Image 1 (cartoon, helix red, strand yellow):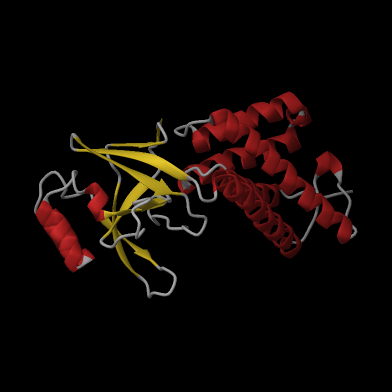
Image 2 (cartoon, rainbow, N blue to C red; image 1 turned 30 degrees about the horizontal axis):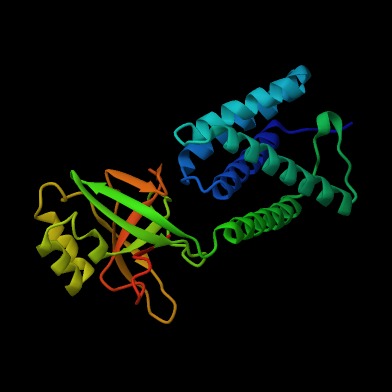
Length: 276
């Protein structure tokens, strides 16, 4: 007789669901809303416990409905929800296959209701391998399609408008640790139309001077914050970043990207003024 502990089932599925949602967000390039992911994972974990009580809840249509609910909770504010749902199903299948493969390797077979009894160490290893593999594979596929591509960018801030070109760079992995949003690094000169001359002059001195100057402006007082970055061949430093009123890339509105101001030129020949 197989003994199943409800708390083990809940905690295990909570962790599994969270990493599935995290992998889905990274594969779809969505913002990392960790609290929403945790709540959505908890909903899925409660469902896994209820299946132990009412087996009919494990029917495929009900599982699909649960998947829709979890995706809406985690990514409801993002565009392309159908894309998120499809990615969620694919990642779930991949993670499930990884767990099943791990169970076969250690000689464990699924028990009642498909419950697999594995040690946390085995689960951690199988999930880590699957998570890394999915991230690398999809990241390479996306990078292959966009490598070297130059895109038109339009930024609107405070009723002012700036237009420039941005180069997609697979090596740019700068993210804002607070929001989880990716950061586009742009030459300050390309955004000159948006900000006062004194503000850009302060940036030439140091990021701290820039923030001090911005704090004296009512409209920009809370707009900027500093993000730590590291570049090739240079030590780490601070980059002022902000979220514009409106951002358009190749004609498509984007609200999931921040812009970092770089005081130096990014391209000597002026072919592009920002790096995505």
